[in-house]
Image: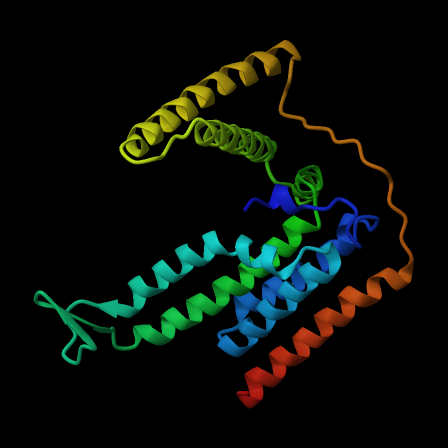
Length: 255
C-alpha cells in the first residue's frame, strides 16, 4: 500500500501552518534519537500510530498494511545483527550451522528495532499530514540545497507514476488470464520489460517537458496563507511535554 492511496487532504491539521505541524514531530524525533530505552520507543510508536489514525482518519488496517515494507527490512536487519552461525549454545542446528544469539548483540538488535519502529511511526505521521509541496517548502526553510529539493520532488513523482503504470499493466495482464500455470514466468518477464521501457519513456518525456518550460532549480509552490490561533499550539505542546516527562521518568527510574 502507498501513502498516496490513503492520503486525505482534509485531515484535522490541514488548515494549520507547517511550523505548528512540525511541533508534533521534531521534538519527539530528537528524543528518540537521544534515548536508549526500548520502553520509551514503544510508547512513541503507539502514540504516533494512534495520532495518525485520529488526525487523518486512516483505519488501523490501512496503517498496518503501510508498515509491512519497512517492518520487513527492519526485522531482516535486526536478525542479521542478533544471529550468529557458530554459536557454542545454539537453539537450532542445520547442516553444520549452529544458529544462536550473538552475545551482546541481541540487546542491540532489540534497541535498533524499537528505535526504528518509533522513527517510522513519526515519519508516517509527518507524511500523512503534509503534502509533497509542503515538505519541499519546509526543506527550503531549513536551507536544504535546491538541487536536493529538486531531486526529492522529481524522484517522488517519477516513482509514483511508475508504480501507477506498473499496477495498470499488472491489472491488464490479469484480465487476459496471465500468471496462470506455465504463463506465470513469461507474464512476469513481460511486465518487467514493459515497466523498464515505460520508465525510459517517462524520463525522456519529463526531460523534454522541463526543458520546454525553461525549468531551473527553483520550485515555487502556491498554497493558501494559513491562519492560526494560539490555542492551536496547545495540543502539540502537551504531547511533547507528556512524552518528555515519560522520557525523564524512564531514564531516571528505569521503568
